[in-house]
Structure formats: structure tokens, C-alpha cells
Amino acid sequence: MILFAFVLGDGLQQQNNLDVDENLIKKIGKGDMEAFDVFYKATERTLYAYVLSLTKDHETTLDIMQETYIKIISAAHLYKPMGKPLAWTFTIAKNLFFTSIRKSKKEETIDPSDISDDRRFSYVTDMEDRLVLEGVLKLLTQEEREIIMLYAVSGMKHKEIAESLNLNLSTTLSKYHRALKKLREYLEERR
Image (cartoon, rainbow, N blue to C red):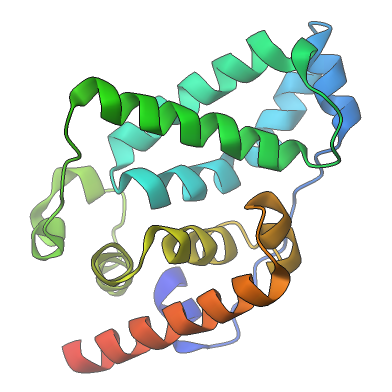
């Protein structure tokens, strides 16, 4: 019901709990596993939403997330301060996603009508949320999916999404509103 309420504009706003700064990455680079634990807890939900917007598959998302966190542990000492550790994390995840596509030589396409019976989406138990997820996967471009998922699932603010995806705020807002309009029209047709 969370995604459904979000798309229909029921005023649902999640708290953004992203407290990631560059000092945390530096500590991880020095082998501080407590810092990694803090980083993981602060970014897990956001990274999941972002990677799911790329993969469209729960299991693949979990695999890429695991690889991303392993890469962060092994490469944190190389991190160059840019003021955007979350953008760095997204870049790692996106590169791993593209590498996995190149390895498989094909991108799996999901027929959204099969989502209701697909065990890969069994973690979405609310039928209304499944309907919204179906719309997100079927209708939206990759960039629109990224913006919607980061906002709806992670509760990130538009400015944070724009910075993390290296987009202008105005571009992010217009893509967000366009995507919401597409989803609302889709849901009205399905009712």
C-alpha cells in the first residue's frame, strides 16, 4: 500500500535517514567495519531502490547490492572526496549492473502482466503495490524509474536525488512529475 498511496498522492512522506558523509568512506577505507555497518544501514534501502530501478528483478538487485558493498569495502581507500559519497555508490552499482549485462549478452525483459505470478516479486505482498510496481516497470524510462524509486522507497528529497544522479534539480522534478502522471493514468485505466 506504500507505493500505491505514494502515486495517488495520499500525502505519504517517509523520513529520509541518509546520513552518509565522506568521513564514513574514509573510515571504511582504513578498515573500520563499524563505519561500514553504519554506512550499510544508512544506504541499504536507498541502494535497493536504485538498483531495482535498473535490474527490474529482486534477486539480481540483491546480487548487485552485495557486489557493490564488497567493492566499497575494497575500494574505499581510493575514494576521492567529491562531496557525494552516495553518487559514488550509485556509480559503482550502475557499473556492476552494466558489467552483468555484458556478461550475460542479453537483458531479460519482464512482461509486467506476469508480475502477479512471478516469484521474483513475491516480496511485494500488497496487490495495489504490485500494480504500481507493474506500472513502474512497464511504463517508465530507466531515469524515471530511478527517480520514482529513490523518492518513494528511500524517501530521498528531489535535490538529493538530483545530486546523486548528477542531474539538474529542474530536470529531476520534471521527470518525476511526468512519471507520476504516467503512473496515475495507468492506475486509473486499471481500476
